[in-house]
Length: 385
Image (cartoon, rainbow, N blue to C red):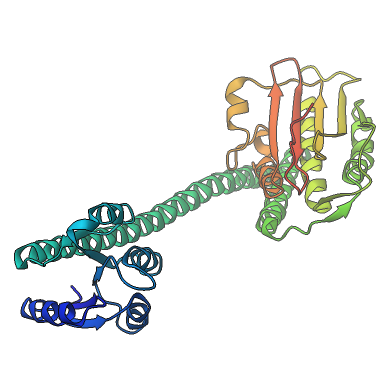
């Protein structure tokens, strides 16, 4: 413990006698004859303990106590008081004085008060050390936990990606086998079938590579004010010919009251809506039997608080609860050999980086409805109506 102690009293005789006793107890004694002088001394030496008389000309001991505790909260203050000042002595305890001693000073009472102040200083030091150790431990454990979570995420991603690549490689092997069989037997049917298998899996490799590149760029989204209906119009215009070729109806519905401009990454939201519409088309193609007139509708509407909502609703085959629960998992796909399992994962990441949410309602035979909610930047209430 710091052995410096400051003795404050306007009476020179008391300062002299007490200084001798404190020196004998092993302290380095500094003295001041007033509260203002004591504060000047404290600027230089920062003593661990202050002994001060309560009644002094000018700033009294109570005011000195308050000032010391405000400026140097870890300094212990012991009050010196006469028998007639007991009310002030008790009041000093309310302002965090560690103890008080009545005059004339008894050596035993002085020793007890100083020991008590020393114990409080030691206890505070232990608590501080414990807190610092605990903070370091929490920081270290948090760092280890984050690292473990990252490794787990990397492991899960690598496992999913490996599974997808393995499936593609299996498809290529199968295609090459059929192609070689066709070459060996000079069979045009085998040749065509093998070539289609190879071409389809090469397409999956291309789609996988492009989606991985897009996924890597999601941390560099560019937010700017755009027409919130623009990405939806572009996706509908882009995909309408494909839906018409399969007898489907793709339509766009814009709600009244849409803002002229909304801060978002238009390219990223375009990618999200394109993924959802493409998935809806594939779901309709997977419906058995495929019928004309299946509908896919893209809605754009304003949310309370200024947010924007996008919905992609279809009248296709729908999904069971087990499939819905896995939709946004890494590399999970319902498209079999046609899918990579990155589209919805990429969509969810882009939406979340906008501070938004995406969810799905679906049931077998009743179609599906994916909903994207993007909040306004000012953080208003963004619940869909």
